[in-house]
Image (cartoon, rainbow, N blue to C red; front, side, top):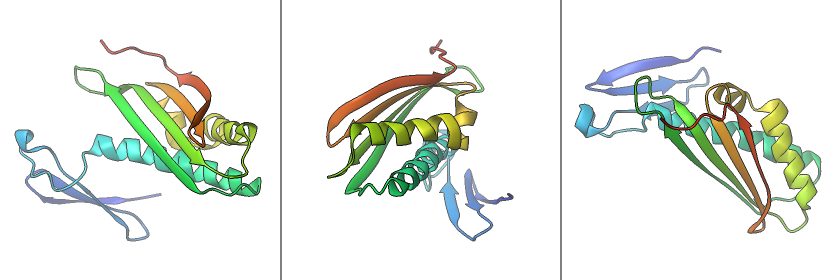
Length: 152
């Protein structure tokens, strides 16, 4: 896999995938950016949700579960000194389905987290992942993975 990242001026960059998709990134105005795109660390959290979300949908589809809605909320806490790596990441899966059981949804999330999601596997080397799973508005599971390091 190879991507290209092109400098656009000031602090802005555009990432280009092999398929021609683009991701605009920029810094905050207080550090010289124009706020014309996402911060690279925000893109990393989006990548985490996208990676595990694709897994979960694929697994649930194989179980013949219908999905009416699926949203994830991801919140990351970074250490204060450079490099400001993520130390704690909270990930909430919110799935709406008329026919899924709690066991099916829990299994799909666990398979993603424990076997398939490469972004999660990389991040858990330095960050603790706190995972909450909701089915039709009700929490069905909560668990943790990774390096459970607290902020300094």
